[in-house]
Amino acid sequence: MGSVLATYTYITPLLTDRAGIPAGAVPLVLIAFGIGALGGTAIGGRLGDHRPMFTTITASAATSLIMLALIPASNSPVAAVVLVFGMAMAGFTVNPVITSLAVRFAGDAPTLTSALTTSGYNTGVAAGSLVAGRALDSSLGLTGPALVGAVFAALTLLPLIALALRGTAGPSRIVAHHTTDADEPQETADANTAAR
Image (tube, rainbow, N blue to C red; front, side, top):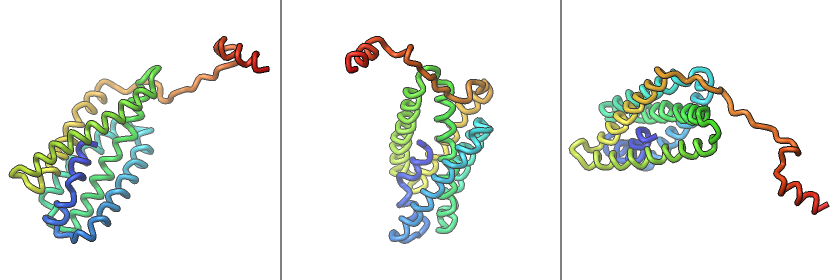
């Protein structure tokens, strides 16, 4: 998320000043980004069930390559729109799989792990946007955020490949435990008896 949103946060200057897209058309490009993000989430959820590590590694590599391609190709309005769509699709493919893997290995704390995963995404967004803002103000100019995004996406490959080499064997689902009335805490049972 740090990689995709590092670029997305500063996408308007890239689209208007570099690609030559009129400011009034930028919302249409953002709609294309949203459609790509929705598609990526659906693809990640579907493919990640069967091949989680292959899906995340491929999507992260594709995200990095798309952002690298955005640097020279952003001079063309059509190429810029296509690459922004592709960036969203590839980048958002990773999220559902990573969240699922985190919860799979959470043991007795799946809710906490899910919350920490979301916090991790938000930390990545903040860090990516901060570094991309600095890059935008540097000599890299309008292409700085895309370069930062490409580097962040490439760095994502390191823990993913390490996890793939380690293996992801673990329970494939979280199984809810059914409790019976006999498992009901004594205080609740006493309260129920008093209510009757």
